[in-house]
Image (cartoon, helix red, strand yellow):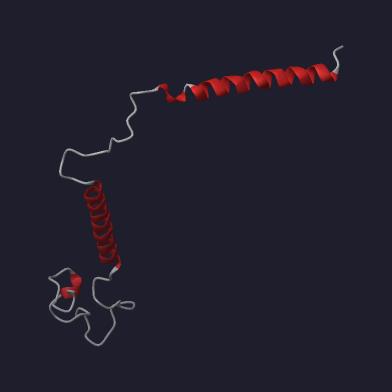
Length: 114
């Protein structure tokens, strides 16, 4: 059976070999001559990344605005005021919003427009 010191020495030899490989690769680091650090990224078209980002933000805002408007119109009651229960009331069978039928699918009155 080998002594524990032989295992430690073998580990140190392997780590020394690894460190020598790292140092050799660091010495070869400056041999690449095709890399130029003075290059800058330029777009050939007249559209800058800022303009593209602003257009994207405008599109997202427009989508959320239209989607929100459709959602509020779907939850808004049709008659202007929620009618309670049944067909009672003082008018007998008259529509609850007056005589023009604005709350029953007719054209909206000027009070319903925003």
